[in-house]
Image (tube, rainbow, N blue to C red; front, top):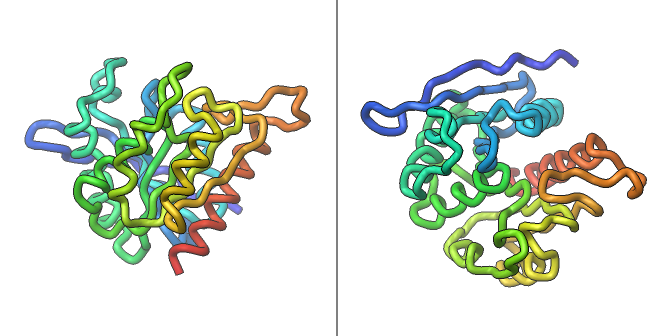
Length: 227
């Protein structure tokens, strides 16, 4: 099956400030995922590209976008208020571009957390669920759940796709967090995977199969929650 090429867009975040985005829209799309990148790399990182392509193969469109700090070549993430405004701009653009499709939002690590913070502060118009590809529950080596406190204010279905070797999310702590969110939260554990969804060769798995399992889980969750 030939997939549509990603189309370049520009998002206006605030007067005088805009960021780049990529819209990938398969002809059979049943939903659109507004997909934010992690803290260390932008929307064209190999993981983001593979995720967008894999979702398209599963009938899910994506709108990937840059946060302003990546757009200007900085390594220091934006302040939350600016990151949240960027999330909102991306969601609004996805709704304009694909008004017939239900929206989900989220992303990799930092991008997913900024999305959930934005949703907790004020619901994102049209968004019907959140997807986290490696939720950064705490800094490496400093287990804790403070970063998840805002999730209590998210009244949407949430999917946590998490590696069992993720140094930014102790498995038992994340299980406790998702249990506390009751039926709003679904946890998909990727055995042997780290925060980047990398698995060691001795596990008998490989990174491509692990990502495929993750995206199969996203597609199944979309089918169950966006009927």
